[in-house]
Length: 87
Image 1 (cartoon, rainbow, N blue to C red):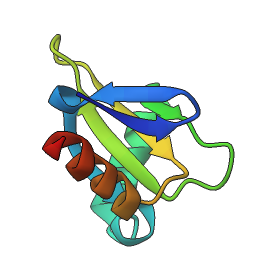
Image 2 (image 1 turned 180 degrees about the vertical axis):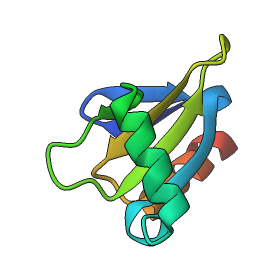
Image 3 (image 1 turned 30 degrees about the vertical axis):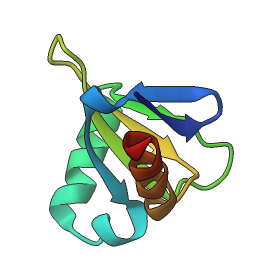
């Protein structure tokens, strides 16, 4: 099954490690440092045309990690995941 993150981007449920709200997680210095380091190393993929509201941490089978910035709120992404998974 797949989760739509916006802008024609979908990720497999198997790859998702976590879905995070940008407003609450960037309060922590550790989270800000992690996101900054990931962006500098080219692991951040912005799928948002507007101001991003959430990020989705994914790990592929080969071990590489990507962070997708989405304009869709973390609450909405979680609802989509639950609805799709229950289907």
